[in-house]
Image (tube, rainbow, N blue to C red; front, side):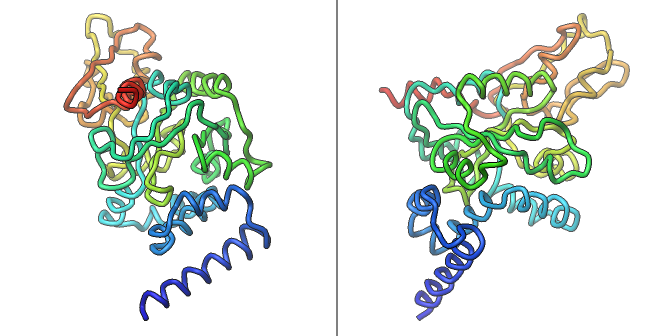
Length: 309
């Protein structure tokens, strides 16, 4: 009897949201593909509905959490949120490799790379479809960074869903356009990150180009220490002989991982290995060091090699 009521309530929720609000009495093709991708288990536990709401009203979704929920949140809620919805920080090269994959990647358990209990799959076809969309975090702020169209939804069904449901706020882009955007955002000092979410079929679905002044995830990390993202697998190291203590790296570090007491130094536990300081240091005094304690990098070349074996 309980199962029957769950099915009835779930069906009613879908009717209300799909037909009443989201679909205007006609299911779009990408919505049908989303339901198929989600499967019956996620349908019953409402993750299909959650994922639909997240994609269909993403700006409103993120604005609500950033402006309403975060200010009153408690640590257990923040930690739970991070387990469901998190990122893998990427170097510029790692982000580019996700865009120009040469082999299909159907990896369903990446615990070593994405060390969270949920949402750690990558399922992509080469070449991946890419749709660029308005950044929900930047649009949630009264004063925000530009440009705002910097979030890349990667692969299916996500790229089609965003393009079909948001024709005025999104556009499909080529691999070349995506690479140009990554490089431009990197030059602005913004962080590339691969995002995973349980309600998005437990999968990688987007590359965000995050700034520390707008990104809700980075804000949670810097303000509360919430583990919203895991390291790229690298750490920055400063050559004191080359460093001129200009303070540039301190100002631009998205994770507040560099400080100075007369000598500029990296705060190891905070460094996420994004590489922003490495490339923007005017005296070229900062190097990237592979550090096993920082976890396994999201190296697409290795994933492709494993799949071809």
